[in-house]
Length: 313
Image 1 (spheres, rainbow, N blue to C red):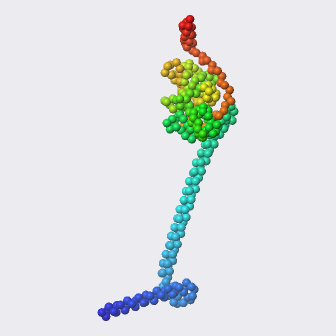
Image 2 (cartoon, one colour; image 1 turned 135 degrees about the vertical axis):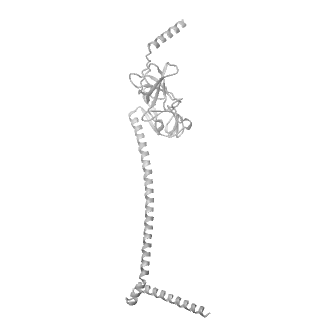
Image 3 (tube, helix red, strand yellow; image 1 turned 90 degrees about the horizontal axis):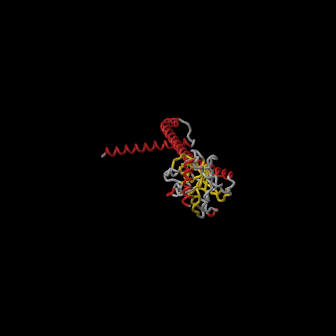
């Protein structure tokens, strides 16, 4: 019991001694911070005692400041990175829009150049806003309608060549049947002066983007690469609009005529802007000259005529 009481007193003395040391250290630090402590032997002793603690506190403070500075720099860099990413995205969008405007400007310039050269036509610019999903290569929808003066059977073209004609008209939009449609029929002729062979361009199911010029006599003067233009016959398309070029030729099923495969002047897969001919001052086309027949065909025609005359008598 006595030993336990003695140990308790010793522990109490140690606690009081520790409290006294801590209080002394606090007072020394407090008065030193306020400049009220004069340099003395006790100050030197206290400085010696506190030096390790001051070094630790200084090191810890420096590390904390360093970490805080790094964290601030990281946060600043992250924010700047986000700002740069947003700016890059905006520049990309602006660049995309600029490219679209440039492409549209090029297409409209093409139509404008054609309008300035084709004084006989009144043209109305229109934009392709849709395609018939069931008739992708046959019908398009443009953003012009009856409110803009559009009517049925008005021809549609681009600066490069013929597109088709208007088949349905709404208040603010219209449907256009392309020359690629198998139901389409365009009176055409070979532009080359030595040829001037006439025919009809119509769409085909075998190659939706390559229509055919049919009803060409087998011995007609048609060469690969010849330019095909509208003949003006049929009452819809004025004369002289480029349709395309002869890509290849082959005989038809009857063997009496031949067919010319046409490479269209218009790229229908990239069709975006068109022009509608709202009025035409084109002069009526010249009469079609009779095609010169081969000797065999001429003899057959004479025999047929003689037989017809004899039967009539």
